[in-house]
Length: 116
Length: 373
Image 1: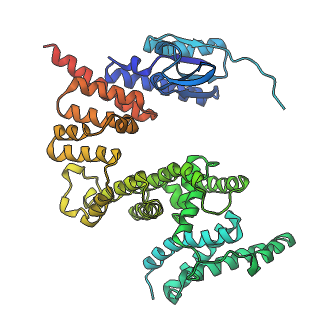
Image 2: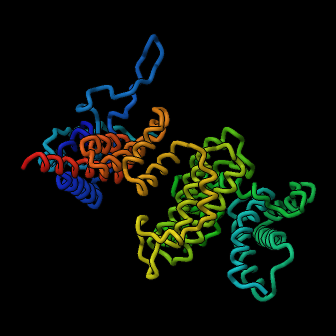
Image 3: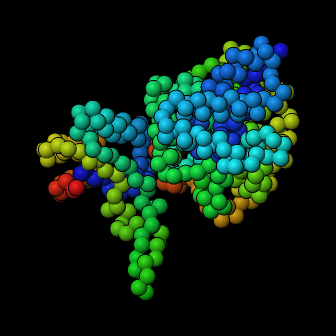
């Protein structure tokens, strides 16, 4: 699982339209490549973390509050789930980080025997 | 003797009602739909030359019911028992007072059934276009720019799902109705925009779609006159459709709103649309855009200022997006940029978000250039 963090808003603020277009094209190209090679299992982009709702226990009852649990820059923004070696996952991630400058994380999804 | 065109109009109006009457009487959505298609074919063949029967809908219902029962007969002994049960007068639901099956309410019930929550949004739309809008699979496929077979599959899967979910043909209870109302409105809106802006398919189909969407939305509005969102949707459709003739020039190219010949706008539609406009927030937004076009961005912004905080929140990113555009036109670039960013953060649509971020970024660049000689 390849994870991107932060509010896209923060990432986009202060960039040129060309930068945003380039970033989007890079993501779309990687997404298309992964899909075509059959490596892609799922990819999703989440709404801005500013729109998140965090549910906390308040006086023993779960209460929803506005905003993300972590700081916006630590909040999940989107992910790819791919079936590939760790090297390949790092290679894909490096292309995005190389462009955007924002750190990203690669995590292995744990094995689970098929359930009947 | 009627023209093919008149027959077609008549059938489009009647087909969903006949289908509704059959489904209510016999259940089995897919079998009934096939039977209605057969009846429609028979009508297409016979009516243009032989004339339209005195009670066309009753004629269609009878032919479709016969086709349905023939289908059952041809099938199996089990099916024959079902047909006999279905034909038993005691088992029939009474038809309306006029004896004509299929009141307008039936069309709406059918619409709510097509928008069943067990279906994905594309399936809801495809099924609605087929069963309520009376479009052929080929027409729907052309509208979606996908192969015929894909739409046929989508529709048959949708019908299976409805059956599997145990849905029955009856008006939804108030709770279900409220749950599905949003989806129903969305499907109607898609049907309308498909007709209004579709880039593919012959012109004729597009007009049919918008007309059908308006007809159905009007029915929904009659059923729920107090529902402001439905009223707003109908108003939006009427006001948009009123400009249809002016939207394209003779060779079919799009004419932007500002350049349209206003004498070609349909005043009756505009009047009907405006009459529907109570002061819902969505309407105020649309009016702000219109006012800004005529009287300038500052006038539009002033109108936006009349919305209170709750109304603004209810409109979400649309409010900020409209405000951003008007601020940009007014030359107020920093607030415009902030409003674009705010709208971008609030939208759930990726293309819209990209557009809004690029607008914001464009203003940043302009601002920076302006600041540095």
